[in-house]
Image (cartoon, one colour):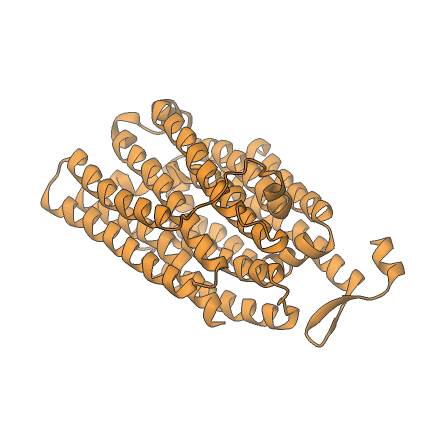
Amino acid sequence: MKRLLRIGSSTFALSIVPIISWFLLGLTVDTNLVNIFSLTYPVQFVFSLLLCIFASGANIKQAKENNPNAVLSSMTIGLFVGGIFYALLLIFSKQYIQFLNMDVEIYKHFAIYSFSSQFIHFIFSMSLEKLYFEDNDKIAYRHSLIFNIMEFVVLIGSSLIVKNDFVIIGATLTCITIYALVLFFKQFHKFKLNFNILTNFKYESTEIFGYLLLIGTYFFGYSNAFEAGTEYVTAINFVALITDAQWDSCNAMSTVAKIDLANGKYDYKQTIKNCIKYTSIITASSILGFFGLFKLYNVNLKLGLICFFVELIDFCYNPIIYGFEPFVQLEYSAFKNTVISTTSYVVRFVISTFVPIALCTVLGQFVGGVFELLCLLFIRFKVYRVKDGKLVKKDAKNANNS
């Protein structure tokens, strides 16, 4: 549980600092800037997808296949691929903002800052992932704390001292870029560059296809939702701000499960127990955040509660989604798990994109989550039983029929 909390708090910090920063920039620079969070929200899923391929997938590969070149090769290629995507974001930033029905003049400068920050966080997160799998989560936690405090202090401090966007953005990006790159290259030692990263996809296929569909879900879904008016934009943006850090920190449960599975130390009973405890913590923090801040943010309470209620329901699924799904992916059937997860995201994408209601993304999230949960529960109770904390197949007949 201690390791879960350390990794979770590191991930939470990486997510909560930008959220708090957007709140405060709305006070110190321009009230419209708080909406940058939702504007650039779809982009985070692209970097999350790249992180699955070039970080977590590579680390699992190295542990399971005893491949000493897998991680550093993937990190090198990941830096190059992430850089290309980041360059495209900068080139087409105007078109991106226009597609999401928002004002280019108001949002362009800080949208570029958000893109840049997410790219730097991607580089930083690749280093953290390597440290996690090397059982150096304490060191990763320390780096995460320093990195996030530095970014927050420089960004908000400079916005209080000067009112020039370029000075604020330039100072902040310079500091976090230097720190991220130093930590990144500190991980390196002599290795043989290996371009064979296809097996990385195997270990993280579920996450990869999921993020691909989430990119489309929020890119097109937010474009539809934001046409409905300010009340809907505000409610969706507020709930996303309140719960996004918690959702990002949920990945810690999956990370711990994958580390244990890669090293043959997975204990189902203890994993689920820890996931339930962790989910209770993030749910409580979300409830406090919602009711503590909704008046300050001038949210339509009815719309806000609808969006927030769906988030709370989804939190209840976490022990199975994050604690058991890695087992299904790595030990039962990567193919079947990918089909289940991809289907749930396809359902979510279709509803979010084609159902003509303002809360289409919320409805899609609910239906897709229920479908995935039911499929995983079917596998859990149809195929497996618990023996001494471990999952074992009930019998060959049941396993084949699954």
